[in-house]
Length: 317
Image 1 (cartoon, rainbow, N blue to C red):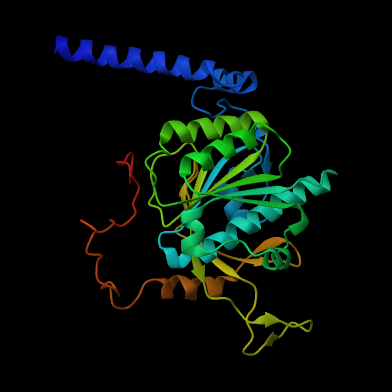
Image 2 (cartoon, rainbow, N blue to C red):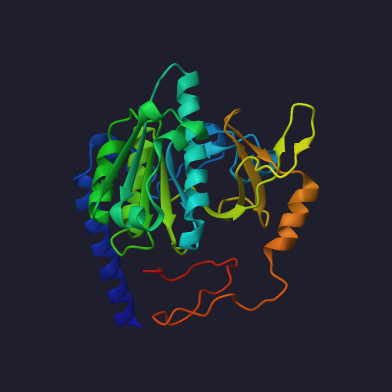
């Protein structure tokens, strides 16, 4: 017992020493934010009033987000399978539109920086400027960077967050790379908070794992409805606004099972699907046949377990 206690104390001392060494290498503003709150969050009774947020406009979602999307700090968005990357990218682009519009309303024409790992672009493609413009984003103030390694992605993101000129920074990676651990996640989160910039970590085909993000969403595609006509009717056979099935995996409030949203690029805002359609989509989300439609990959040792309420879990990488 005594030996275990000594080993535990030694490990804690080493961790404190490493933390001090890493902290000395950070800029002064980041050190101040880290010293104010070692965990990267602001605590206290007036936490909601201190945290700057951007309301989404969907009451049930804003309640889960404690008022809205954070205007400083990290938010993580992931899709479970590569085939869902298009829907997740559309959701991330919609969030970037909201952040850019918020800056524009305050008189700042701030650009959006999208940093992508080349492997992610090879699997799901790159953002298309005319499509981004049709989605509501100011394509003339959109910067796209593609680099080969995740370390380069992290370096560019940390550098960009040190210069608070962007409406939002998007960090797109593939899967769960080993170099993006909880400590790197915390560094990015603290830098984003110190610079007052929202950071969107877009994880393609990644599994959920511990991070310092305020919130984590899993995005699935949802069937789009028909296009509405001015008279209130629907254009039969048409394709309406893009729709998303949003699962809130990490938050400080109780999250519903799933929220169905559609993005209106003309109004630059989300709309909640009507209750009847949401109930139908929720029922159709679970197939009648519980068996998997495809066989397991030969190189995979086990299947991902159903998501539940976990206190802790091992790293996916």
